[in-house]
Structure formats: C-alpha cells, structure tokens
Image (cartoon, rainbow, N blue to C red; front, side, top):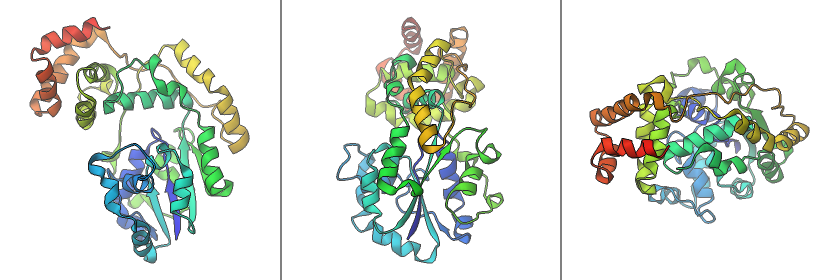
Length: 341
C-alpha cells in the first residue's frame, strides 16, 4: 500500500487542505487517490492518528473515539485501498502526539511518504497562541505563552527522518510567497508524492478556512477562559470561531511589540540555520510582520463587547449561558475585564 501522510504542522493551512480533500473525495478517487472516510474527524484523520498512539498517549479524545477503530483498522484500510493507487491521510495529530516511530511501526511494510509544512517561527508561535486562546486552553498574555520556548522545528524533521528515512520526508515552507499560486491546496497537490489531480474540479472549500481569532474577540475569550472550567471553555471553541465574521478586527494576526517579536525570532536563529543546512529550507529571507490588531483595543472595548454579547444572545450560544451562570450582570463582568488590563 502506497501512503502519503500529511502531518501538518498545525497553523499551516491544514484545515483548508483537509476540508478540500474531504469535500472532493470523488475527484481524488478519479485520480486514483483514496481519502478514506473512516478515522475522519473534522475532515482530518485524527481518529487514525490517535488510534496509532492509543496505548502510549495521555491525551484523550471526546468519548474515546479513537478506540472505535479497533486493532484491525490497518486491515480495513488495506481492503478499502485495494482499488486505488495511493492512500492520502492528513492530521496534524500525527505530529503533535510526538512519536514518529509509533507511526512507522503502524505502517510497517508499506511505502510511506511524509509531507510536512513548516512556518516562520514568530508567525507560527503567534498563530499557535491565538488558536490556543480560542480553544479555551490558554489564559496568559502572548509574552508568557509557553509555546515561545517550544517551537524548534528542525528536531521535528529529524525525528521523522530517523523513522522514515530522508528520502521519504518532504518538508515544505508554508508562506504565501513560497506556495504555488499562494495556495496550500494547489501547492500540496503540485508537489506531494501523488498522482496528478485537477484541482480546478474541486468544489469550493471555503468552509474549511480557520481564521485566527483576533482583536477584542480574542481578548474577551482570553479573559472569559479564566472564568470557566477547562471543559466548559473548550466546549465553546467553535462558537468563538464563528464570531470572527462580526468585524474585520476579530480575525487575523494580533499585534505584538516589535522588541518581543524580535526576541522570539532570535531565539530560533540556530534552528533556522539548521533547517537551511540540513533540509534546504530558507526562512531568513521571508517577510514577517509583528503588526496586527490590538488585543485589547480599549478605544472600542464597549462597542465590541456589545457586539459580542448581542451575537451570543441572537444565536443562543452556550457560551452566554456559561458566562451568565458565573456573572449574571454582564456590565459588571465587562468592568472586571477592563480592570484586569
């Protein structure tokens, strides 16, 4: 069985690519590519990734869904793939569960190619931080984000190369200036070890885009994460993401002080050198920008709060009920949030 394994990394257009693949399985099938249904969660094969690691990882999925695959999942995949030239699997969980040797063991005896996109360090960490706040797992300021110290990328490639071999790992730079047509889907299907796919036949996959929550929406989310339990906060992540359409300042990068941004970049100077010397990836010439939406933006804090609350009322969001259970007077809650700045 020939397998192409797209492992992310996170915050490199993975949602757009996965949604495009899931929505256009028929087009892929006509090109001889199987993007299997089983093991899919949110258009990605998180179930397979967690299934491989189910005996070793401490991380849990809701309702222990990876266990539903059963120990014979690889046999099911082989059977389903018998009429196809190649199997395409995509999940950033293959990467973030952290053990390529487990993945190699699971696919032992098969022809596996690993495709991984890497991003300029500062932009990656900033986007990662914003995602963690949206997901309800972060309450700190950007400058205190633990991910700032955990974003070395050369070691990630080294681990996959050690398990699969240098000729079977395809590293790519995620940056619009480096992507074919500036698009992750076009780039992936033009450069991965896959049969030719006519992506012009793809149905519109705009629903798979995952814009970064920004501005005061991110600020409100970070502050309210402190009021809710972790379980409560994570349960309304999608509700927060849906509100990015309310205002342009609610989506995109947050602004970071230039000195801090430079410190983050300097921390990974050696990592950039190693990526270039070992894998031919050049990040130093790529554009990067610390500017973005203020978080918080105190000039519009009241109008944005009203927009935030009214939308939750209009759509009867679960998050509103969780907040009012903790603080029935929302005006008092805003005052408390403001005083924390």
